[in-house]
Length: 115
Length: 116
Image (cartoon, rainbow over all chains, first blue to last red; front, side, top):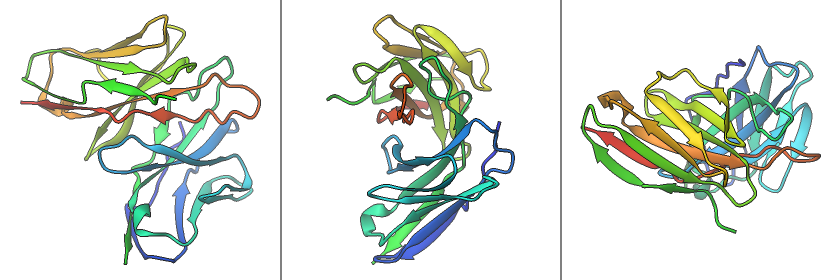
């Protein structure tokens, strides 16, 4: 199983770009990298997913270098509402209707956005 | 479209008791997985079900069990509760994989269990 390592916490200010890096040195060939956001007393919510290079959607970008041993979630122009815990998840998408195999969530990064 | 529904949202038990938690996935989702979340251990995978079959299991003792019904609803049971079982138990569902599907997990709001 791919073990992930993220910074425990980060601080930022409104309007800044935030980059959160996840290390996953033993990622397997079939593994995808997915990031989730979690607010207190809620379940995590999907942000973005990628396999290699760069992926962008309406809320974030995900950068994955060629060796895939790390990934960086980029949040452009954060606001106070982006204060949350961010999880990096590495796992294989299995065929046959299941989602992931044994899933490995990182410890999560507590992002605090200040006014 | 209704999201993932977990019941009960909060419950208090005493050591030695057992508890059953319920999860109703999003309509059309056939895969359901369960997680335990604690401040010290983070988010840990318990097990995953698809078509009433357990596909994967995390590193938890046999006191933790689950099942899935034909309508994809799932339950998990914890027997002989210990103080350390106090946690937020999260359920997630997902679509069957197909072309272009990310396998995104849709989480419920969780069941918060307190063991006294």
